[in-house]
Length: 140
Image 1 (spheres, rainbow, N blue to C red):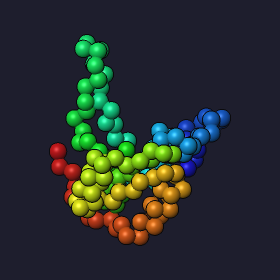
Image 2 (cartoon, helix red, strand yellow):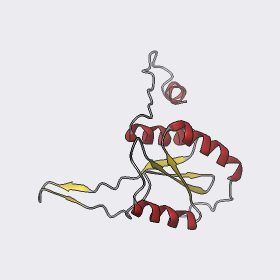
Image 3 (cartoon, rainbow, N blue to C red):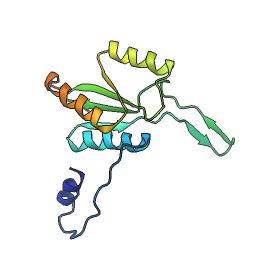
């Protein structure tokens, strides 16, 4: 899908570097998920909660983001989907469990992905449950 999108976007470029995806590391899997959802026409982005390094005080300053939010957020047919990425021995923390429970109670869909295939299977099975709600036009 990514290579097809490149060809459509740049039709006059005779040679394109093939897209390479992997789900062996957390950053790679997160990229796979965000790119897949985006290529399917949905809004998707990575949530960054690492904070910011302040050079003037030589310290990391915590993010203003709520603790425990999953790694990605997407909007699919007016529904909010979150995905937490866990590779290898990485486990969901207690703070993450509490935040995920809060998201679920709020009506969001949440998935914990250990590889791309499990995410893809979950997303494919979920799609029939999602339906496009009529959205209000944007008013500036």
